[in-house]
Amino acid sequence: MSNIVDLAQVRENHYGRRAKISTSLKRLSRDNRRQLLACYPYMRFWLHQLDAHYYAHFLRLHLSLRESLEQQIALAGEQFAVINQFDHHAKLFSAANYLPSDYHKSQLIRADLEKLNTAVSEDYLLPLQAERLISYMARASDVYSIALLGVLYMLDEQLSFAAPALLRGLHSKGVDTSEACTYLRHHCGNRSSLWRFLRSLDNITDFQTQANVTIAATVTYEMHREMLAPRRFRQSVQRNTQRDE
Image 1 (cartoon, rainbow, N blue to C red):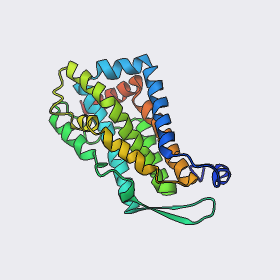
Image 2: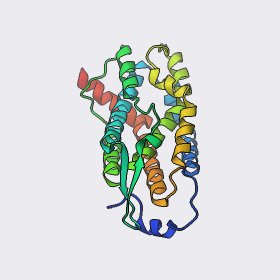
Image 3: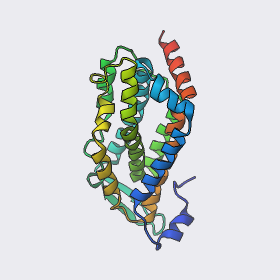
Image 4: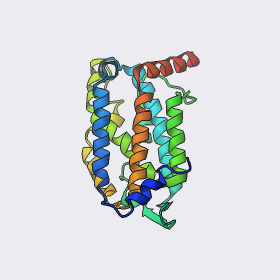
């Protein structure tokens, strides 16, 4: 497909009633949490079986995602420049008006990895789902760069709600959560930043941009969920562990 959003939808909704983007994203977040909560193997693994070794690999996956996202946002520069598919007019969105001031989180992950005793290779073999997610980010950046905000919301929202439970599970496995969990603890105490981010996105009023941000979040929610499915995640950890031995 040459576009992230169908042009017929753009034309149909161009003059229609414009809903707030935060409403769509919060509904999407709730639907994702319902799917996770309904999956017993998923909840059992991430809440009760996550130890230091698995945690290091979780961080390594998120490091790849965060670094790729931060790189794509940096390439976009100070403005997200996009073309309206309805009237072909160029639109500019100032990145400073939407990006949270603390969206750079890859350095937190690197600091946590250094504090963990479990070594994870820099030459990490990413699972297919992570590669697809990173490829999607690059494509979204090329086609409609402001859609990257949907990916950023997906990552921040998931950690904002999951981090407290993950920290409790890690603590029960003997992990010193005061030392190697800066990335998780940052999200625990930063829910207000997520709400500010959502409110800033409500300043986006045209349907095409709303749709592209929401669709990017929808697609990457599914990819991220598949990436962390217990069976796939264990297989990825096993491949990298055997490779490093």
